[in-house]
Image 1 (cartoon, rainbow, N blue to C red):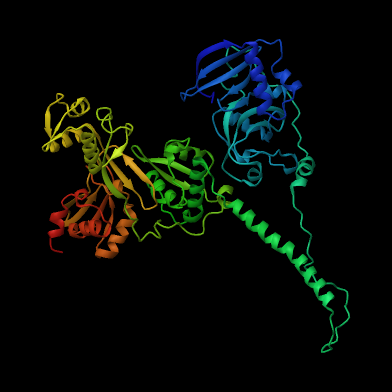
Image 2: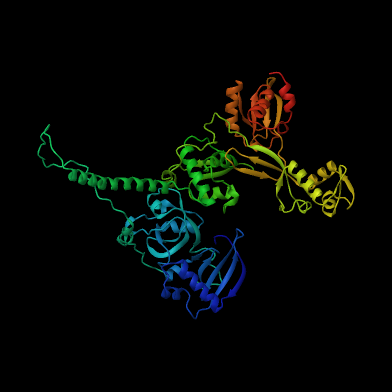
Length: 578
């Protein structure tokens, strides 16, 4: 966070009320912060101030300074203590131990990996994923690194690779070297010791211990029962045996119910969009990681491999997450050590490596089968989305389509119906024409009270609206693009040796996966098919040996249901003989 230069936006001295609010936040966000410990961090008669810093990434953070020493970093939603704060109160957050040479590597900008951590289970703190933790070295208990845990302590104990900490603040970064502060030197402190017996005793009450059932037969000889000897059992004894049998069976039923509940809890799908994205990625790695062909472009990963794992009653939308973009989501997953992303072409990112041995992947409970609507194998091309041409409401026509807001998408039929309702409600219709009022005149760029034919009014209003394209995918997701999609283009070219090949462009814009479509086409047409990119093309193209325009047009229009207007030269290709 402070590895690169930052700018000072403001520096304001805290009032007594603001200082009390800071003390209250520290007590609320850190359970181990008692009044005595908080007084060590923020003394009553201290000179405190808040610095607003603009980081190199463009984000703004606050740093609370007490008597010339930075104590707290305000990220907005939470407070993060600095290393100076932990030198005064070393048990404010969990502290893990790292090997001494690792600190200098992290100071140089390297991330903290799992092999660099000392995983002694008897002296290891407990913390969930996403918690703020600190790291000290084996020879000095003074904290040197502050960050957010990428994985929980339980996973960290068994992890053998991958990034485990998202670094916020390191001793020796530019914040520690700032000339506005007093000289900061790292003291010598004994490492903290976490007694595992205290952790077990605090959580032992939450465990449900079932009685141990005898699995091995008894070694004591029992008297052999006499066979074929009649016995009369009283009714009262039979009732007692039936009651005891039902009592003995009840724990088994409860055990099965508890097991089912625990499995449901493990398979519970996150409710937030960030967790759902991560869950779908882990499911993809678990089910398809061994068979996927790399490199895999990120746009195809989201559309063809993450969306199919989304539950039917949920909608996967990266724009509704905190990442906002697929690139930032994959950067976060790369920091966790799950995937590796590289730029394969100019402006095109792709997955080049998958860490299938990661503990999060191994312990993830993925669905047993792909959900309905997902492609079942590489030989079947995924069904394309249903495409509709729409028009978005702009400021020029917003008054006509009220109460619809700016940006609402309407089809041409809906626009015509809305215009008819608007004219009928105000009595503007007159013998196949419309008398323009102020709103219609503004939309049509004409003078008020002027008569205008319905066709001219319709074309003028549509010209003032933003052309858009709606794509409805088989999994239920809907994508609205505020532009017109370029049609699929088929071109027959001659290659070396006077051989003809068919190039089909712009298929990926309609949701096709070219590798799967090429394999399916090869089985259907009986000719060589593949994926290529010509010198003048902006994206990958489907290549088929020979003149296959008739086959491609029939496949896209008749089998996949694409309208003819989205396939350039469709009529000519369909009328061509096979």
